[in-house]
Length: 309
Image (cartoon, rainbow, N blue to C red):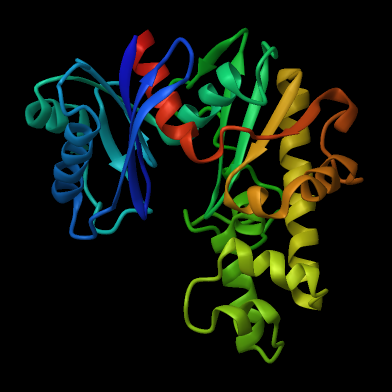
């Protein structure tokens, strides 16, 4: 069965025509995410879907969205997309544009499903997927099924408190995992330190632009003191959060991916597992693995979830 899977991100929209029984894809279409509000975003999603399935062979579309949404497909918060500051019925809007059935899911949950079915989570009935990028997101699989929770926020590991009264998170809270391990949180702290008279290589490399995962890799390899300290804090925060969730849910496996993890690789994952700060009963309670699906995880997971709903 072929389904169109769409991964909506802050910078790009990716669509693929996917056989959900094998994970093989026929076509890959990518387009920049519009910056002038959600209606333009929906228009562009419709355009990439039409290009990915020019012969209109797929009647079902799955869309992964980086925001909070309800079961009717209404997205209430989408902080990584410019101009998305009100509730938007993504399902209804896309169905009107495409004349096809549309299923909307959280993008991190889509990534978790993709890794569970066709990636590093394969064979584990109970697992947590953690994606460390601009922020930190997570998805939980229990007894081979995605668990979304009563409000759709199950797995939001980035907003677990790891330090009481710690750094301010983008959500407004304090001491959240995301504020220590997410790329944006690391950038905010690096720039705060530079402004306070503590120069660092991260700011030097990025100048006034965004500090990217590759800058983290470069500065860490160069043993920049501030970067070394910030990455150590990220490792500790991830170890605390992952360990506590893995213990609470008795998980077999934790899969780690996202831009930061992809760039820093296995040594970064090993440091998390070996950290004395690993929460709960420690890292021996679960197996840590690098994600395998990488760029196509969101689209693949969106297609799978759509096919099962």
